[in-house]
Image (cartoon, rainbow, N blue to C red; front, side, top):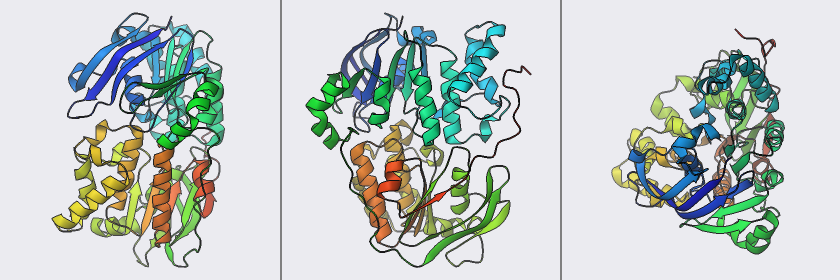
Amino acid sequence: MSRVELRGFGWRHAGRRAWAVRDVDLTVEHGERVLLLGPSGAGKSTLLAALAGLLPADSGESAGTVTIDGLEPRAARDRVGIVFQDPQTQLVMARSGDDVAFGLENRGVPAAAIWPRVSDALDRVGFPYPITRSTGALSGGEAQRLALAGVLALRPGLLLLDEPTANLDPAGAQLVREAIGRSRDDETLIVVEHRVAEALPLVDRVVVLEPGGGIRSDGAPEVVFAAYGDRLAAEGVWVPGFAIPPLKAGVRGTGELARADGVAVGQRLAPVSMCVGEGEVLAVTGPNGAGKSTLALVLGGLLAPTGGQVTAFGDPRPPHRWKATTLTERIGSVFQNPEHQFVTARVADELAVGPRRLGRGEAEIKETVDALLDRLRLTKLAQANPYTLSGGEARRLSVATALATAPRLLVLDEPTFGQDRRTWIELVTLLATLRDEGHGVVAITHDDDFVQKLADRTFPLGSPRLPDPLPRRRRW
């Protein structure tokens, strides 16, 4: 069984004035499949964490009740499986097969049954490597598939998915959707997914959270969208059928900002040659594991190549040899996982780090910080801890930190991850404005809308470099 019931549920993170989610009354019957919608910051991820029993009492203030089959979430953990927005947070073992087996071993599954279930789960999500593959060598999308495999292997009664395809290439996303679609008929599913059209075939019910508290709408997808489609789209929900205007450049610049010539990084990136110019948005696409994030680190001067060379801004030295202040001033980087680049305990302080490093005055720093907070809808979160933000809010903060020093070149890894429709449009419009002002933008992305609406040029990386295959079912 896996019946979910929330009555007057609310949660406020420690140190925050506003509630992350509030006054939620919701019942999900055993076997139902629910798509949970709402603008970025409406509390979707917080609600899933509550159902998974992952909100410690000392980390915030709670209201109301949450039960799963009549039990408190912590007492029902063996019935629940969750995949987080950031899959890296739930990988615990050094080798991929061990990671999937970890939960089964903790649940006391007989040893003879563990490895067939591991193999089946890896196959279902299209994991492309043998069980000996190091989890530390996985790309973000590959880690996402592995995390999902670890949850599917548990065969939970309640499956909670937070943006399960956000970092996946199109083929990988389709495999994951098929794996979810093949889940047991008696399994309850609650999924958070901004890309509504792709998720609709997996669900039979849509629940929309009201940002200020409560439930906006609840019912069959066609009924919810017919009644509230216009309003939901205006508030940021990705309602199918609502077009986005293109933002292509009218005139491209002619100057070159950075060039890679035969750049390679061990087994992580095959030799690549490419360039990015001023006044253009270059989208780097390709399958998970092809080396896109590695290329972003090299172009951003954060990783030294093992072969080839990078030149930028006419400097004879490669970017990874520049002084920190020079790099900060010229190139802004946004990592695939926003939390990896946060270094302070307040959102406003995070935005001040770069300008302060460049020696700018406090008055100028405050003006820069306030402008970015306003432009990226973060003003109400200025005093919040960056690590308590939703995935979409954390992504906007990471982009804002890269913009704080006004660099001429931006290297962004999945810049639109976790954004609702409204913040997606605002973020893409901001990048288009920067491009029109002469900045260069390199965006690692699986977001086809981003490519179609904004990118002036696309650079596809090839297939991932795979090791020699080994049998998956082998126990070592």
